[in-house]
Length: 506
Image (cartoon, rainbow, N blue to C red; front, top):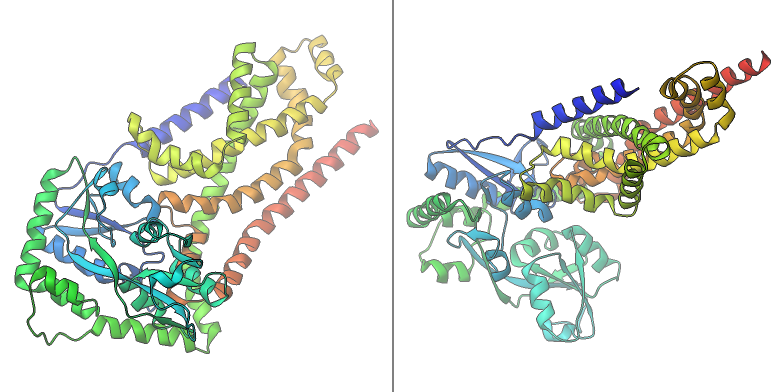
């Protein structure tokens, strides 16, 4: 038994070492990150080609890379993980409508501002009470989490603020009457609220927002290079051309760059986006559309399956180890196992994932996102499996162990050949249930840059403005993944029960 546990832990350490080593940055690459999950107009997935990324910041990042003489490499990260990922060295820069604020400047450096804009209120059609921010007092106003809109709303007195992670969630809650107004960055209002029926954008500009490229504080050389690249883009007119193509050039930008010249650049990218949205909203052939999603959802489903199966195998072995140590180990090791189990069961899985992926680099441990996901899920569920095993072992009569010892078996032989086989039969049902739960909890790994099935769903739903139909499709895929495993667990439980009944006959 000791040999098997030793081999298992050696294997785990080897995998962690292989994937955990930090990859040296290639000086010929400009590695940048953005959130394509809900990103228009900054960074978003193309509806015609789900593998293609588009957006104004996509164009800007590639233009900066060209000025640097480097190749742009995009990393997709959820919004809340962009700055933590930059701090741990996963990429060189964040180019995704990052507002320059004093709080953010304490943790990262910002380039020369490349875009200046303002905020706008979005209300329901026919809303007459709200015409500006002062009219929102006593009302509920929604805003995107951790944005300048939230800061401006906090400065006002008497406004109840509701924060959201997704633009469409805000607009749907506005339409459903859960909030009274929405405060968006002007570009977001243009791209999300403008195409929607039943809402309108109030024309009055609110506040002033400044965007910059976020760069790790240690990388001062890249900061200088990016600043020089932005200066050249401004001087050549390329920066203005990019924003005009996306219909985002505004008077604030003209004042900031002191560029009041007349341009003949057409908003071709914006018109293409509007056409894509119009097509998505009116397309009747839903069967054709949903079939086109299968490759994207298939990739996400395969990642979910791999992650769940490997994590559960890890949890089963490590959980068994914890159970044995807790029951039969020295009181010191038994106490350690008990404390581990209670701490893990008593803290949220999401916090554990954040700690493993973003916290451990502070002490020099940097893990690949896939390995971090396996460890997070595996270590969490190992605590629950340990309790399942402990209950199974305790259910075996003490006389079984005593009889085995009387026959000359060692303690470990008695445990391996007599107690554990009976205990495993008992714990199959709860382990099967835990695997189904782990399969669903694997959706949380999207916070550490893993594109699983749930992440693929949110990407598609944001592009197609269809959370209902795609949600049903994704729920069906989760069911199809989990159902065979549930049936396999029932079959194993039934077969082992039959084997037990046969033994009783003799």
